[in-house]
Image (cartoon, rainbow, N blue to C red; front, side, top):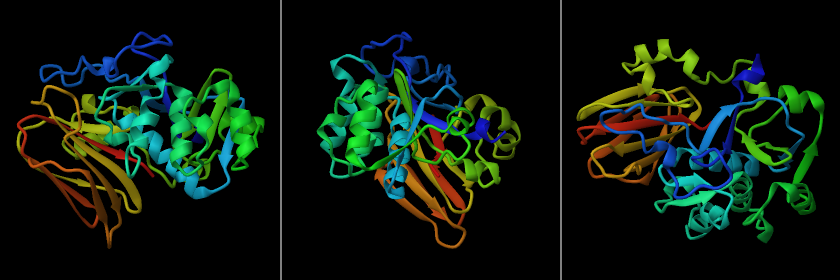
Length: 304
């Protein structure tokens, strides 16, 4: 069923499963060299679409929708620095991104927090809708803030809310007390235009690429290995977030971050954070990673 393939990105809950957390990254502290699988149930995460939503706010500008989806996925990828809490620290992602020339939550290096609404609010703000209310956005006021901006269309069709029929990438999902963002479009999934990898679908793919099933974390695959060079085949006309974390390091911070736009004839790679020991290159649909670290975590996450 198409609904089961649609991903949503969200700030879910604190490390205790309650409204209030302390420093970020608590749910990832169980990841060690001895236990590389660890507990990867992030405070920010990506899950499958499920019913129960009460409204969808769709950006009228498709470029805004695309930015919002990419911003959410970038935030989820930085679980080593971004956590969840509904206290005064919930503006952390917004405030750190505001300091950047090119706002990108994947590049945050301080320990910060957000909650579901302030993360979505930051995505909207840095997509170009510069409303001051978005910094401290709350779910109870989202309808008023978004609709008064004139930049969104409000949808309440039951088939869309419960079954994701006609949901689009970058749609903002809302229900009482929670909000999230769709990373996929129903039309792409229903027509087989996106072959996303979920854990239960991954065994064959992982074996073919020399990875271990337990290294899969929902929407990314992780590789722990020695120094050396590895190559991966990407999907044509897809965009990926690629990160590498040196597991010899004391923290879980990403030592290198790239965006890769894959095309069989002319692929492109953008370095968001460089590393002297780990390099990435792309030739056609082949991504090559040269690892200088003895142990590491390689994450390749499809963004589009």
